[in-house]
Image 1: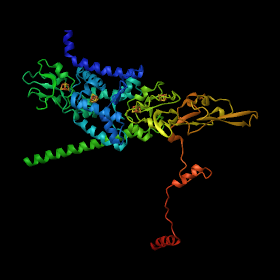
Image 2: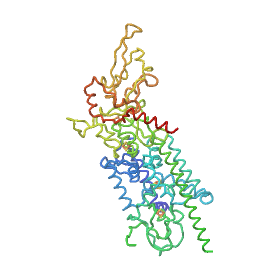
Image 3: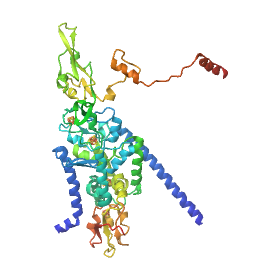
Image 4: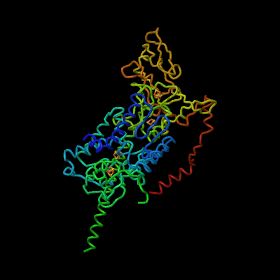
Length: 269
Length: 268
Ligand code: SF4
Ligand code: SF4
Ligand code: SF4
Ligand code: SF4
């Protein structure tokens, strides 16, 4: 029984461990002077030897008219290459702390059965790509990386590590938006960083693979996936799950028939 | 029939497009104005070796590595309610001043170039070395409110002077006879802006209820004379004269003036 629960949540447990672990490492740098991971999700100084940086932030800054130092640019390239060629949009489900907030909202939404009847307001999941473009376009106009001044991801980090100030209101707003207004509202419709990683990870190696032979059409995966449009091949044909899939593994966990599994992308298909 | 359907769907598509464009414009305007508001930061003191403020808010990736590197917890990252570019580092000297670490740990860790070691590089024979020299930092400049400073009242206090890491250089005490008592001296603190780093140790130390000496960003606290005033008694300043660009003013001859008048009269 217990082992079954763990098995059914194995990726969830792993994801939360990594997400919280990163927060603890970041926090340790501030609270106890640890040197493992300084900085935040925009740029992190790893073991006092090299930097990682958010390619989306570096890109906006470039658009705003400032070329960052080599440290940040190299850091951004490392991150970009890692997600684009290997891990896909994993940032969202495995790293981003907002994911824990929006997942909580979704969980409560489902528990309280707010799911369908409260959706009095909907909009396209493609909106995020417009937000992404708009952010880049606005950066040179306002003379500052446009998304970074409203970025709830780093705001949440700052809140947890340095104290919230008024920042909690933004996070609470985001949570309520996901809970009461639109299902998967932020991460599934608006966040430009999620859009950025979705757009760049088309050819990433790690992808979920669907085996139509094994699929019994139970549709459980559609119930757990936060980007259900990516599951359009399920029950129809075998293949890889692409686009906005964040490699969270929820579908893999829920599938009782082994029809969805993490796999290595076959470029020929 | 098919035609009208086509027309309708095309009209629908256009409608969606317009609606989308409208929303985009609206969102862009709201977002843009918020961004402009959230980056305004004129009254903010930055870490040492920060580049020019306008560039700084662009450059800083808002990672907080400098904040974590500071052993005194001087630096903070701006929250929404801090009235400065959100997520960027700043400090409030009355709370915690910059203690001017000789090794300046906050600067070299900056990945973005918002803090630039070159700005405070120690020079040997006029050549920049890799070493930082914190005394070259220009985080701001201390300003004395002579009305609130009790030393200017004639009461003895040299708290700021003693607190200054560049004691005797950035702040000196000016002696003057106190005519009111006839037997005491004023010891008035005077800040020298070329030396002052803006660390704020003076502001931190000031004994008045609200500090009578406080650090302001350079661009806020300083004026500019302009190029057309030259100190004739100062050799170095006179040199400036040679480098000045010639400003061409249009000379008008008496005829020009007359013609202008004629032109006005012609109109009638
Ligand atoms: S969509 Fe945005 S906020 Fe959501 S998990 Fe991804 S990066 Fe984080
Ligand atoms: S397809 Fe599966 S792995 Fe991808 S986002 Fe949906 S549930 Fe997560
Ligand atoms: S010089 Fe030292 S005290 Fe001043 S901000 Fe940098 S780390 Fe902090
Ligand atoms: S280390 Fe540099 S980029 Fe990071 S917060 Fe400080 S000034 Fe900004």
